[in-house]
Length: 166
Image (cartoon, rainbow, N blue to C red; front, side, top):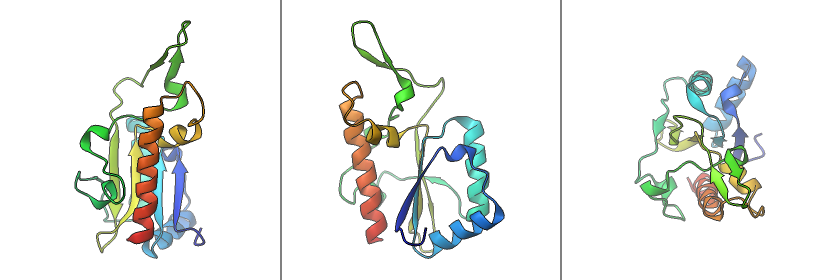
C-alpha cells in the first residue's frame, strides 16, 4: 500500500483487522498516506469502525469535518447543504412509471468526519451513512440521480487533491 498516496476502503463497519494490519495502516498514515472510508451505516457498524481506528491511531479522535476545513474547499467548495446522504444503488426504488425514489435506512444521518495526525493533517476521511462510491460506480446508469454523482465526484476530487498537497 506504500506505493499509493491514498487508498479507498468500503464497508469498513465490518472490519476485522489484525494487529499486524492495524500496525501497517498506522505506519502508512503516519508516513503520509491518506485513507478514505465509505459506505458503512448505523451505530453497530460505526462502533466496529471506531474501535478499529482507535487501534490504528490511538489518541487521535474521529471528529466532524468543520465547514471551513480546507478539504471542503481545496478545489470544489462543498458547503454545509452538500452534506447529504449520497444514496447507494440499494437505496433506489423504481416505480412502475419509471420514476426513481430514494429510500434511506431509518434514522440514517450522514456524517463527514476525519482523523488528523499530530501535525493536524487529515489522514482519514470518513463518509458515514452515505455511499460516495456507488455514485461513482453508477455515474453512467440513467436511473442514478445525476446530482448525487456530481456531488460524489466533488468529494472524491477534493480528497485526492488534499491528499496530494498536504
